[in-house]
Length: 209
Image: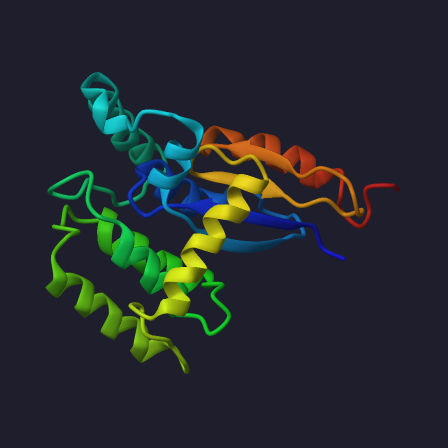
């Protein structure tokens, strides 16, 4: 059975975008499954009593500089939205609505991340959101209404699941336990990917050999 990783993210986070794109490179050659879990970062911060980054202008300025540099190192097209933070609800709900089971695939998540973080768009623009949603519906055999109660409930459930694992921010990757009763392992941030790789190496089919 392949190791399972839950990737908790919010589209409002530039570091989540970078980690999403870096993930295949960081785990290249390993056998694993990823389940993408959109969550509301604001809900996680509130649950842990953590102030939002927007309340710290110096930190926001550093994040802009740092993420642009990181994207250059990754040779990745990247630019901040015109206004940040933006309301992530429509984007999170689109991700969940794009899957009947509420588990968006990598193509869906990549389409949404790139629509926000590649060319400096206005992420709160309803016209842009509708355009991206139409793009997704043209690619997928079945979608749900992003404004439906079940999609909204799914977003809440993802947040509760994240908190049950001890997730306090995004991006967080959770390596799920293989044995009942064992604890999950948390890897926070882009910088957590090398540690996740080490943990996955120990769970590869030929690790014992």
